[in-house]
Image 1 (spheres, helix red, strand yellow):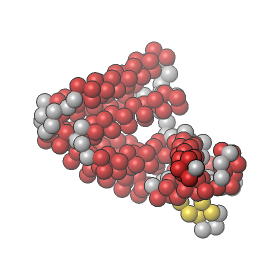
Image 2 (cartoon, helix red, strand yellow; image 1 turned 135 degrees about the horizontal axis):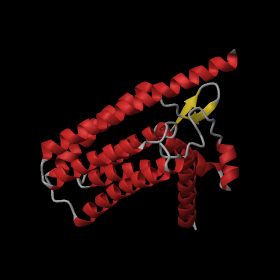
Image 3 (cartoon, helix red, strand yellow; image 1 turned 60 degrees about the horizontal axis):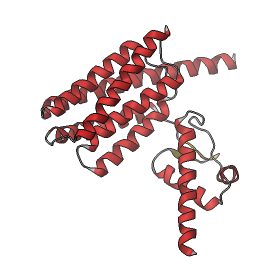
Image 4 (cartoon, helix red, strand yellow; image 1 turned 90 degrees about the horizontal axis):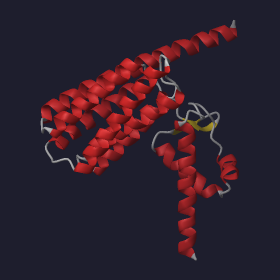
Length: 246
């Protein structure tokens, strides 16, 4: 009986965790949104204990934060947060890709990476055929997931579970802000696919230093783009606030 209760509590905690994180990553709960344990327990039909445990885990991972005046809230990503997260990504991923290039990649990992590259190309071709200038929200979500999968599988070949877990958490935090930016255009998709292809080719050929150099540049360009998008978002937000006050 006790064992069944533990399994039930664990399942409820995981469900609460997935639900909260899903709402954040979908953009439903932007930074500053108040999170109520009581409301969540009622909505999910579970006791407050598993919800509290899920909230504690998400707070530890940086997705939620304590707001002194309003209680628990979705973390607000700042410009310095983005800069630090990209610095961390570069330090870990560049080291990992060098290690990955020194080992033999499995056929399954290679197939998954090539499939992800194909998905990015499909998104680009679909966008070009639609006549639209940029990916819509659904298309951008597909791209963000494909991009995350590419880097995750690549890191998987380095066979360092702790490193993979840390990078995945870092990239998930970055995705919180990703929801707020505009969709990529066809040229951006083409450039990213070319960079991913060059990284993969270097790893498969065992060219460790070349793979590291390409990935480092790829991450720096992505970070620069994210910072520019953040600055633009901040400008629009400031103008909106000034307009409402006027």
